[in-house]
Image 1 (cartoon, rainbow, N blue to C red):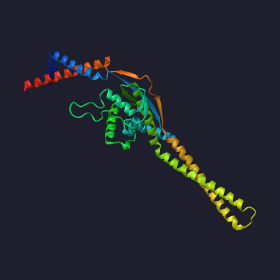
Image 2: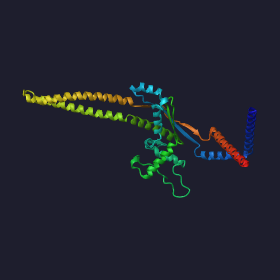
Image 3: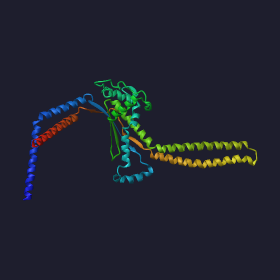
Image 4: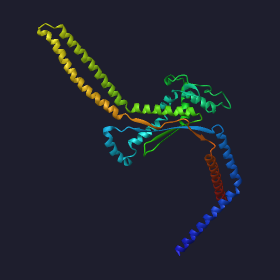
Length: 357
């Protein structure tokens, strides 16, 4: 008996589910006019948004980094086998570090204030970007009510960020925010290949921005990676050069003494020569150790210097992306239809609950 009762309950539950589905299908078919109106409204908004952005260009650079540290290669490989248990590996951390750096204000500063020729005009990339945004009314749109936009007609005249006025600092932050939205990054954990894509309605501008970003990002990453080792190397080189110059002066001094005392046999005259000769031998020993340390520092510097290699640099002509593509239109209609159907189902469910109450 309990099994029969359970079966009957399940049958009733299934019937209830089927009836509910039928109710929702009837509600959807009944509201087809409203659904069609919702789709038309959504497509209208989609069209309005695409009037000024009907096409854009994508400049993409793919690259990889090789920062294997010679003598530690075996240890790194061994540790890499356990990276799955210990979390992200050092290589994965470096990939994320580079991609995060690409959207920082420090890198943006280097990009914005690099001069390039766009549309036959040589200027800061920041100013080229501002002009392009102005064409789309995205940089300094006039307010409906009130004073005109303070960025109207603004262009950067100097690249010295430390000396920027308040308006220039605000403009720089605003431009960085807009630019960051056009930058897309990605990396493959398996291959270690990274990609940076920059979008712009201007083909030349997209190309120059992408090319400059890769150059500045690579240089900044390499400089910061080897900063400590390079300081050590330069310090040792300075000491080595100083010791060499001092040793040469001492040798010339000894030669001068020998020339001045030629033909004399006084023992007291041998003392300065003996002192100089002793100093030279001592300096020679110190110089030898310093040169050895300098070679070790040079080897260490070369060993830790990462090499960032462009695999596919940006190349003109760039890929064109169309806003009104068949794919985008289908996605728009599907999304609007889905939202409209979900709305009908929710309203139907709400009405049922209210009627039961």
